Structure formats: C-alpha cells, structure tokens
Image (cartoon, rainbow, N blue to C red; front, side, top):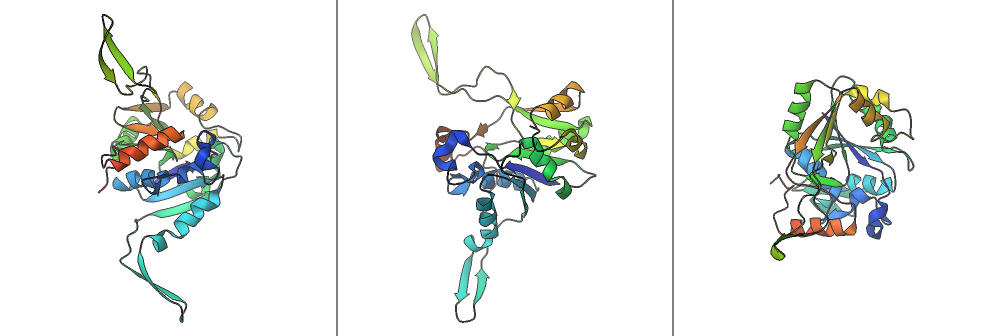
Length: 257
C-alpha cells in the first residue's frame, strides 16, 4: 500500500525555522519530522511513500537523493572518480517525490499524485508534521471492516497550559498539560479509497473542506478514535517539546527499534 505524505505547506507558525526549509524537514533529534512519520509506517511494514512537495521542495529531494550517502561508511577513490559504500544503514523505503505546486491546497496536492497511486486499493494519507503512536495495522483493519470510502484517526489534542486541581480554595495538585475539552479532532492518519480523489476539483480544493465534509454528509467517513500519544509540530514550542521527549529516550511515537 502507498503512503501519501503532505509536505508542501509553508509552516508560517514555525517561521523561525521554516524560512530555511519546509516544515516537514525541521529536525527532531537530528532527523526531519518527516523521517519520524515514515519510520512509524515502516514499523508496520508500509515502505512505499509518495511525498507531495511544494514550498522548498528541493530540500526534501536533496535529502532523499543523498540519504544513502549520509547513512553509510564509504571510500572515495579520487583518482578513479568512484565511490564504494560500506556497512550501509538505510531504510527499505521507496520514495516518490512529486512537485505538487507551491500554492496548491491540500486537496489539490492529493489529486496531483493520483497517477502514482493504484486504482484498485486504498492508500494512507497523513500530514508531514504530526507524530503519534497509532497502530497503523489496526487502523487499516478498521477501514477494511467498515467498507466505507474513508477513515480518519480522531484524537483529543493536549491542553496548551497546565491546570490546577483546587478543592475549597486549596491547590491539591498541578496537572501538566491535561487533555483539552475532550473533543475529538482530525488527527490525520487517514485510510482512503481511490474514489475519494474524484471529490477533489482542482488545485484550489482544501481536502479538509468539501471533500471531507461531503464524505461525512454521505456517511462515507468513519472515525477511529486514538487515545494514545499524538502531537502536531505547529510552533517552535511544539518542536522543543518533541525534542525534549526524544532526548529523554522515551519518545512515545518511537515504536521501532
């Protein structure tokens, strides 16, 4: 199965770093967050990726074009002009990098990669800035079982600030970033049938508006709640939080060894 990754946005809310690179290439633990997302899918055996590029897409292309070079020992014979690789340590990934336009909306990006997707099987779709400990295999099983056109992972976002538990005016304990109002939101990590692409008109179509809303109106969008870890890297503060988790050695989304 193919995994489509939306990696073309501007990332304006994390402009401290996105003025140099696209947001999916901002690093957590020395690796682009896009790499972390791909490692999650690969952990469940899904290694065929289609990456929708836009803003500074050449940065993503250069990263993957040089991936083996940067993850292997090598001998460079300057006289012969040859490079010999030793002890390569790279992933079993096939990565298709598609320029889907600098100004194209999320729906338009999906439509632009349609030719790279099989016509007779579902595909995964997710954003290039969110990590989670989602069971990808169980998500696919859920999708196949209900037989509708689309599945979305529903998550409860963490609260932005810590909370005080107060009894009769006395603070009993401080709760560090409890869940929000328990409302569920679109957490990405979709499973989609190829037919959903027909709902996308053109480059100006926002996937989260008419296509998803139409699927919902027609009863073709099912949600699988995920009550584990989920985080979107929207701001520098979010990045720093993920960095701290990674540095602790207990990053919840790191399911691979």
